[in-house]
Length: 222
Ligand code: DX5
Ligand code: ZN
Image (cartoon, rainbow, N blue to C red; front, side, top):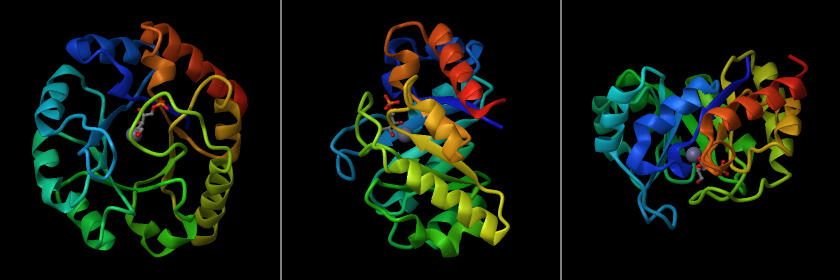
């Protein structure tokens, strides 16, 4: 089932609760929260205190995407703050198997994220451990960038691997998901669509979330 995950990175941080509520009215079903540390990526965003406040502002699951070094050190704090899904970058986790176990141990749904240059085959062995694989379709750090076309091949490869291994993890795409890219993305096989700029960029999150979701469902023939 296709789901839209509004990314609050492009929202008005002074009115987060209202922004999230509007995106939910437009059909968003999971809220995507980008955590950046200024080291793993060249930008700084937010941490557990904001997640804790968001937890009180919405009943939707919070999908926290950690773009930070030493992610294991912060996993318990995100669990305490109320994160529901937690993903770590393949490139940032020295002991990915341990990180994923730690996330599950803290009661969250584990995900692994791949940067554009990281090959899908590298995570084959840990796929049985994950709830979702997040394919970055831009280099992480900023909203509003253009979709990198070869990400579609990575989605197709993941779909193939999932079938070969008899698994059921979900495939999430993040970066440049917009009106002109979303049909190809769902046709490649992604079902969790993160969108920041396309939802919040014009200041009409309800309207724009609804339109993007409709375009995705149409593209998928749903
Ligand atoms: C980028 C973040 C994304 C970002 C996507 O590093 O991981 O979640 O919000 O933004 P858009 O949808 O604007 O490309
Ligand atoms: Zn993200």
